[in-house]
Length: 248
Image (cartoon, rainbow, N blue to C red):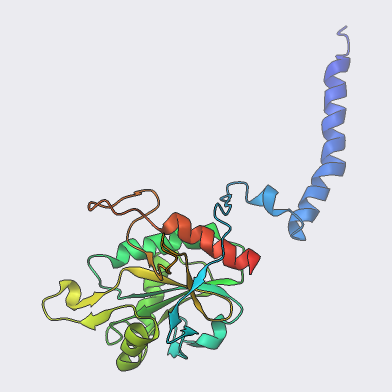
């Protein structure tokens, strides 16, 4: 006659109790969204601000430059204006979906930045196409999906060409032009503009105290430098976004 294995019985009893008491509580927490971010997003990037000095304003004719009013259709068919970004820190770029050169680099960097701030409803991105004749709402919808856009405040916008070019060249001082012979038929700046929650253009300052104004958008944080030896701005841009989100 075999002896009862009391150790085996004890372990089985503990497992049974765990299943009856603990597992239902875990399921209930998940169903009620009661799992903390640290538990559910353990791989989320940890970002700190290394330079606590305040960001500069872009001053034009003695006044801080504010984003000019705009209103365009986004990839979802919604009318989006500058008012939709009030209360949000956001980035601005000018691009076009068939761009064969710098646009893919810029938008991959923007996706990287998007993924750095996955739980911030007060962070957004405004992407304006400079080829609205081709970049319809439907084209931009597919484009955004192909790049893995998940932030509901990232708007790819299209509309009147003259209004877009005026916004780029005058509103943000970010060069954009249709140029015969250029790659893809257009030329545009590869920089990003950083806008604070009140709609002002902000940036770090250089060694002489002057605002740098824009951030290079075509060199990734992973690359660090381009072929000309220019350093990336994505890492400092992430810090400056966090600075505006948390400290101002």
